[in-house]
Length: 367
Image 1 (tube, rainbow, N blue to C red):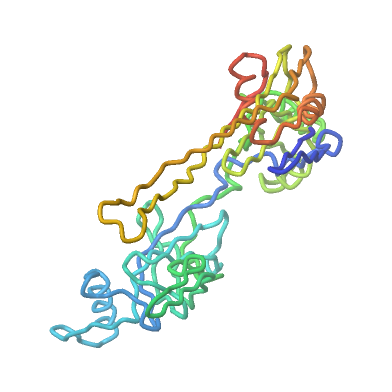
Image 2: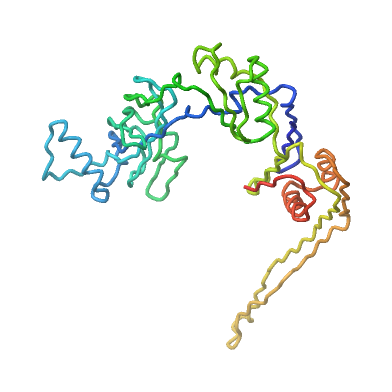
């Protein structure tokens, strides 16, 4: 499969020959049931340099801090407790598949109050819950913040997002998921990009590699594999087949990013006969008002603003009409549009018009 990448300034062609090299099976599919689980928790970051929450405005941060100190044996009930070095945060992470107790995972820290900066803070022990409400990990550690903020009396500068940070290996898994992969009698592979041709190629590659018809395509997105006696467990079966090389088939697709003017076109794109004419009419309007002043020492004179408008119309007459013949390839299309001097942003409009005319036989994805 070849792909063409077009930049905003000019066209650059980049070829990827995936058909000859092939792609490993493990890069095309996910094993059903083997996935990560999202974790979330509410915690406190302490040790900030006066950039924490205003506890008067964020009462839940004050309540959490009071509860934490009480658990540590410090009674602060009835006290005027207004520190500025504490911030209420949400802690998020992902429990990877087959994570064992004691495994460390990365977590992300995000302020939810009016804290202005988490730089230099430390997250206090925070339980992380999954969707079932159970605690699967506990997070704690110093917060790493990539952004920064600096301010003075008349100006301030903010780079990045100083109210969000990460803690690499900041959470330790305390509970394992109740899932035993080796108890499965069959394995179902879910294609990341569903396609009937790719699914049948996966089925044939597995059956040919193993030497037995153990794989069967269910639909464009799934292939079912039965466990054979020559493999002692599903884990051994996956280790034997995950490196099989497959040549994936993909739909003809054009991806357009209108904000940056980037266009990505697949080599399977085909275009029927159509004529393209790209105009280049530009109108420039410039206002240069003049001021008429009365003579010096004039008693009845007034200052009058005289409007003055300059309009320029530029109609480039060297634009030509491009005729796209039947089943023209992508390379021919790019060469023809380059000959017309079409920029990527102009090409976006041309592709939309060709699609509307029914001559573009590809999926047009705009972002």
